[in-house]
Structures are given as structure tokens and as C-alpha cells.
Image: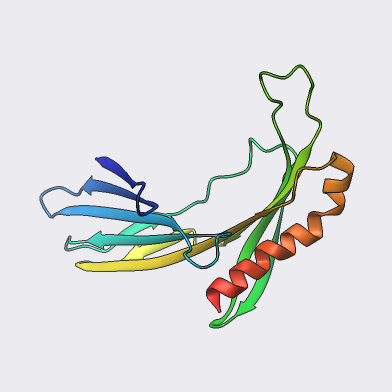
Length: 171
């Protein structure tokens, strides 16, 4: 079973998924997503996995890809901050700005966009009768509307903005 609740006033999205494990108990995964209060470029995801069963449970975790973003490229980088360093994926590319449907003039402007997301472990074990929680911070930065040629020149600067936002949030 799955349920999702959006609290527009507080800017929170709650998502809960439950899995039935025989008569030993229900395993639940809850996620709360929201924008960082002080750093608007940062998205926070608090994840809690509750395993009330008598057996350890194993989960395969994967991040969705960038298959629908043809201009995107991805690199991996270690970012040093307050509690050491972590591996992050840096995904950047050009996003076209749609033309106004009421205008007959086409829009040739684009934005350079960079997203910084933490690399996650592929396999996660949650011990019997335990709850595991973790927080994932992601950052997004983007340029002002501009020509495609100018946007390509902004790639490094936009990536650095997103990296700096992560460092500030993790600091």
C-alpha cells in the first residue's frame, strides 16, 4: 500500500509505503521531502525504514536516471564538508524554455541546470525490529534564460553554485 500527502502550507510532501511480510508485521518506508528553510537551492529528504519483523530485511536502492534529459551529462565527485567527504553525482545540462502558447514568436532561450545528489548505497540492510533513518540533501542551480551558446559557457559556474549549496547545507 502507498499513500502520499502534500501539505502546501508547510511545504512538505509525505510519502508512506507499507509491505506485508506474512504475519510477522508490516515493513514501512516513509519519506518526507521539503525545501531547506535557509538554502532554497537544497531539497531535503528524510527517509525512515521500519522493520518490526523478526528477520533482517534487505532493500535494493536506486536513483532514477536522466533518460528523458538528452543534453544531460553526469560526473561523480567527492565533496568535503563538515563530517568528512561524500560521493555525489553532478548532473548538468540544458533545459529549453517553452514558448508562450499565446505568442507566435518562438523562444530560443534555454537555461543551464545543475543538480547535485548524494551517491547512495545500492544495498541496504535493516535489522530485525529496528528502524533506520537517514537524510539526503540534493541541490539544484540554474542560469537565467539565455542563448544555448552562452548557457554552455555557464556550465562550470552553475555546477559550482549547486556544489556550494550542498557544502553550506552539510556544513
